[in-house]
Length: 440
Image (cartoon, rainbow, N blue to C red):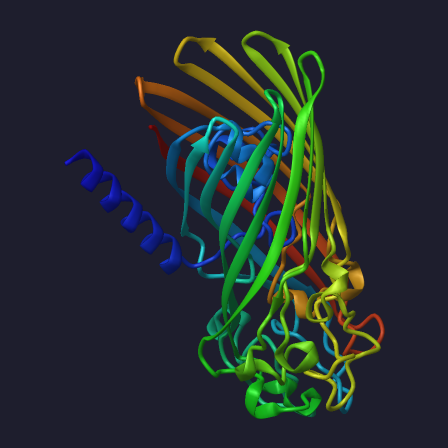
């Protein structure tokens, strides 16, 4: 009976993960952490594995966590808005952004449930295999036409005298799921290596972008085509080990994941609908500061600029017929470095507390604010908190919380007369999550 219950939990967790929408927009569009334990201490885990989602950060950690299963869900709330300042010039071919005479618009879609799941099986005392399921996302916005001001036909519209008509409500939705199958092996009692084969699935839709039809190489596959999806495979490798008594070092690297093309949006994304997942690397330390406490520090790099649909700048690439071409415009995101600091303290047997802080580069330059109305992932700082309560010998409850204070980026509308209109992107975030872990 117990085995049947475990199988039911496994099936439900996997089904929930596959069905979940992606809504993260923290460190770019990558999550600030994947398991609830990692989330509580700033996403650190490359040198300090604690559960069966360790492979999302470093596959080497899986052999250190034993036979266990973890399932969790987070309630994520990104509060996004954009504002304009300055009157449109009204010149032929110019492209003012609504509200035309200045004002602020808030995005709908403010609450998202994001599940995760992990299961690890020890093959013997020195090796393990595991499955970890987790999500990325961040381009989930909805700008209602009626919120853009009196008489405004939509966000992306040139209005009278321009080259396009009102497109109504505008937005995008991107969801990415990762299924990571991992093999890990100990090199000693305190060191290990691991490798994961990652199957990635993504779905995407865009709407309200018809005004950009003149800029598209394929206007029929630019906007309002519903969801399209694609898949791809990648590899993640990692090592971790004690380099000095009480001090462990960890490092991991994930390859760029070449995804299939999103054919319904090959007139939007560079390279005829290509939207690959950028490569990432992590390196970090875990210092056991006392028998009951651990201090972690980690650096991560994400190579957003290497994916053309994400990294290509808008200008001067945006010319008639350029959207969807290999050198066409993207979101202009820069590569970012992420610095994570976490602390964990066991206050008593069975009760553990966590705190953390994240500081990362700004991926969006002031020159790229126009397209990034669709994906205003401007966050640079995150404060985290968490706890784990041992419920009985073989199960535990974990809670995690995150707050990312308001961040903003502003810059000129490049399709208006110089100095005529400024666009400002703004966001803050909250997240609460819970997880249950079982040891076998």
